Length: 395
Image (cartoon, rainbow, N blue to C red; front, side, top):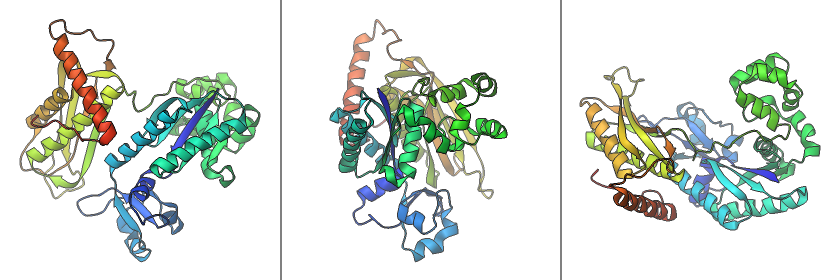
């Protein structure tokens, strides 16, 4: 039994190339926007990297280069990226090769392959990889090994060494050879603090890390760090915390242009709340609390500043979109102050519990069941035809 990790290549940029005819093979960057038309590069194609552009560079610093090289600049479209991610997920599930397939983030997936032969594993992974490219236009790197951490490490090799052709199967007998070549900072689960502690001991590779005595690792690192240490040795020790298993769910946005209208802000907050509720239902959960926050642009010293947040608790846990959105808009209305230019707002759901752990209200069980069926049908339609195909108005 092997674990499979799939990571989309330059995902935002790949989505834009896949949905914009005529952009393949050309330098293209995805950037966030602000009211001055600036922003930073979030993702870029190999052709854009080849002319010296890098992720995180502010656009204003490379305006001349962008113009001279005819670089295509695309504003980030997270709705599109989520839609394509859902398509990848559904296509792979329907193919039936990968078991226990889960979406870890918008551009990463994990699953299981009940095989042991490396050559056979590679053939089946190639079928999955080809399906993703054919149906979505997105190229991916695939890693396969005994644990999730080793599978993600294998993906690093698949994406950094052309000889693997996008697929790296890492069997036990080649594990130490691979870990010796894997820089410590590239190990999934080794954060900044852990990296500093381990580097101080002369640990520079993943192999150096696993050769430390376990007692020393237990003293130096957290439980999560110990789990990473064990997984690199082929011992399963982690539970996947996918984006669909969050303890809190948030949707927020930094607006391209500042907003002064209460109605416009209400529309944004209602949309954030709807997306949060959908994610909540996707993980079969309910929430007890909704928080709304908003603030002006703290970088604009020439403008009056204001920031605030408010919290509402539900009488009983819920995943009902109208209930959550109505509460969120009510919180916004209580905080809104005219005369300010708002730059960012967001909705957070917390107090999340499993929907099976809550007892039905004896006197409202039938109405609650109707609402659940309505939400289920809404989610199916939006999943099939795109986000916000069905929305709730007049909240």
